[in-house]
Image (cartoon, rainbow, N blue to C red; front, side, top):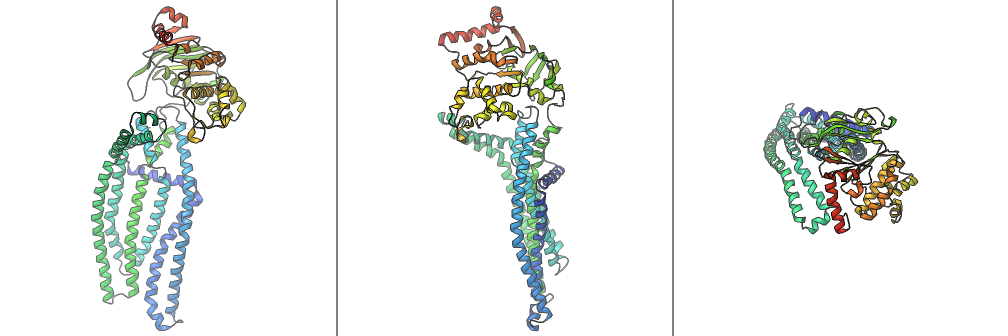
Length: 618
């Protein structure tokens, strides 16, 4: 099931269902607080009407009570009215803080609940297609706008309930003058309420429709505030340019919102003026009745306050309802993200066969073709390749030849457009995806740099055993990085970022940490498929040579796939495969490929001549 486009207006039914689901999630996160809020809100809404009604009752009987003395029935009625007024005022003062405390409790619990739901849903997506889809990134941006939406819904709902209770209470008081008064006040306030309701949807739609501009503005803001681009921004004098671009995209994303808000404000002001004129007419009618003696002063006071309170409650209800709609207009989009693994995973991951119970025969790419979703360029075109179990194969070729894409397909971040990939003779789409990935020890070209402890950075290769320092040290020892880590101020517990009170590493040191993480998957997780994508890109010649000496030990008994542009590195492999235009065009050992004098030999000689001239491959 696909996701709704952001330039489509959210159907009212989707809004309603999302609001109900959001409130249900709030209730599930904190049921006791939820019920307490609903009960206290209803009572809080009734209490102002009690004050108004009893004030009118008190004013009606006070002349008779003065004349009759303290023991008269009228005096008793006046005392009862004052007691009820006092109790209602005290109740309001008590319930307010209690309701605030309950709302705070709901907010804290729901925030944790919603964060976990979104994190779990997005990390459960089996592949990467969503993350590389601009439309999906726009929806992620929109989802940031609704982090508090269901809690805000509860706030607005409780306020709406409170004002609704107050509305009916004030209507009952206002009706003591004439039954036609409550319907008249309601009719006067209704047009403005409808206008506010419609305005919210229009403004919210325009904001959502321009979410791509908001996302770009956020990107330029991150460029200005984060460490990685900070050096280039200053060296190249880009600060002003970045600020201008951020402002340009922000304004592009908000311009229509401002326009609709201005138009809506003018409409609402006109309708509000009409409502106030009608309210004045009702009030003057009451004044005339009081002067003519048709009603006593108590009825006039209570009914006039009831009319004013009713109008205030109606406007508050319409405002809360509009805010409730605004808070939830983006909620259907956020809930779509939560439902993605179930409704739109973009990749079938229903295989149940264990990848660990297979007889090891190797990896086979059988007539594999691939085009990235949303693009037309063919990355792999009928590729065939077999990698026997326990052997090491290096993939080489110019940029865009499809080397890294092969790794993504083997890791099942995507499925082939056509053809299939066999692991030990079984199509990997038939395998349980978790067990498949548990056999992989991978260093990606764009490996992650976790601003956490050195122990975590290595231990994440087998996260369930990351607390075992001996295993972590053994993995790090395979790539010669133990000494460097243990020289840090806090040793293995040193955060690898000055941002969190630790230390920063060089590019080469980070690459060795990533290699150690892949080794951890072998040492602690018994991963037998080693995938190294540009493992020496940031290493100097000395460190690359050290890795070369460790390569036989690292790959012993493992099926190894090595991707590199550095031919000194690929010579470590048993076999070299040259890719061009998404196909295998050369296959053999280094010596065999050099004898053939083909594309591999040509590029090797170009790189070697540079090395002979400079004394370095870097």
